[in-house]
Image 1 (tube, rainbow, N blue to C red):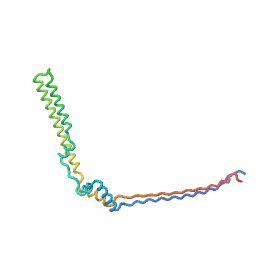
Image 2 (cartoon, one colour):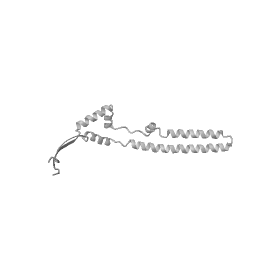
Image 3 (cartoon, rainbow, N blue to C red):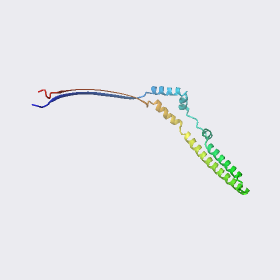
Image 4 (cartoon, rainbow, N blue to C red):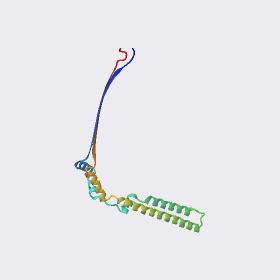
Length: 170
């Protein structure tokens, strides 16, 4: 008689644990204190007083708004005037008219640059003034209100099996 039959047994055991808890105010204060120390006290000072909003002149001095474009316009005007004066085929009246047109073009360029500079200064000044003391109070609440968290986890698993094949033993 030919046939097979068998017996199999398997066992599996698994477990998993995870935990999460918010930082307490002391832990957050310690973290903030370390950041303040690393910044030479500037972070704490900023959190208490904020920053002084820069004036439009300070913003322009920092970024040089329009300075490069003004220089390019001046150089272009100087080059155009040099070419006008150096052209022997132009009459006196033509030279004067060409100089007038060059001056008008230069004035129009400077006007456009001035308008763009004013718009940029206004935009930068508005952007610079966005962070208020109220914003800093919200940040302080986040830092000192225990909103951070610590997470930990572990996992363990075992498996074993056994098989018995009695086929061909009979």
